[in-house]
Amino acid sequence: MRLEELTWPDFEEVKRRVGTVVIPVGSVEAHGKHLPLGTDVFAPVEIARRVEERLRRRGVEVLTAPPVWYGHTFVLDVYPGTINVSGDAFKAYVREIMREFAAEGFRRIVLLNGHGGNYPPLVLAAEEVSEEFPGVEIWLINWWIDFREDILSICSSQGHAGQDETSVMLAVRPELVKMENARGGRRSSRVRVIRKDIGKELFPDGVNDDPSLATAEKGEAILSVVSEKIARLLVGE
Image 1 (spheres, rainbow, N blue to C red):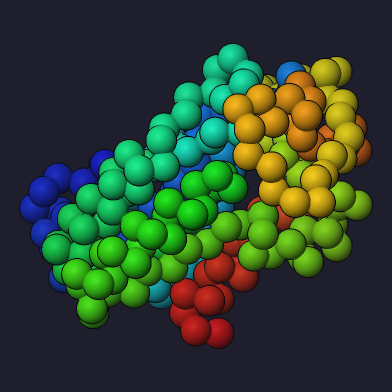
Image 2: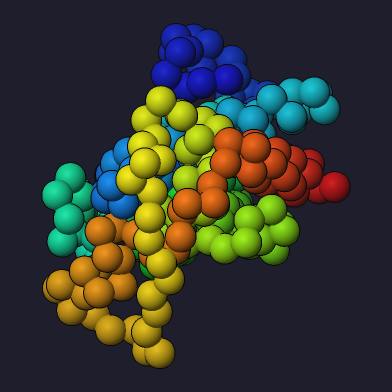
C-alpha cells in the first residue's frame, strides 16, 4: 500500500491492522556522467515495492511511505546537481517524520536507505525517536552495505555510481542511463579525510568504481536477492 494513495479514512483503517511502515530515503546527487541524480531514491523505492509484493504473497501487509528525496551529501556537493542538506536539518526532518508514524501507532519503522551520507544522521534520528517512543522499533537498512556479500556474488565490484548501482538502474530506469558515459575507477583513503573538495579526489566525475561491466541482468539479480532477504527479515524467517 502506498500512503499517498490513501484517503484519511483508508489510512485510519489500515493502521489498525498494519504495524510496519517502510520509508525509502535517498539523495539527489551526482552519480557520474551516466546515472541520474535521483539514483539513490529510485533504487530504494523499487526495493520497497518488491519487498511489499513479496510480503503480500505471504499474507503480510506493510505500508510504504513517500520517499525522502533530499539527503546529506557533503562529499558530492562539489558537483552540479547535488542538493546537500546539512546533517542537523536532515536528522531533524526524518526524526519528525518518524515521530508522526510512531504517534499514529506504527510499532516498526523501516528506513530503507539508498545513500551513504545519510547513515550517521539517520542513526541519531532513530535513537531520538526510540527514546521518546520505547515501544517503537526502528530498522535502518542500507541495501548496498547490508547485503554486500550477495551483491559481490553478482558483481565483480561495487561503489558509488559503480557496477552495482549502474546495474540496478539499468533494471529499474534504463531510459535514464547513459552507458556510453559509464567509466571510472576505485579510489580510497587510508583514513577518513574531511575537506570541502575531497569529493573531486575520491569521486572523480562523481564515480568511485568501474561501472562499465554493469548489466540489467545483474541489476535484476541484485534487486531480487535484496528484496527477498528484506522480506524474510520482516517476517522473521
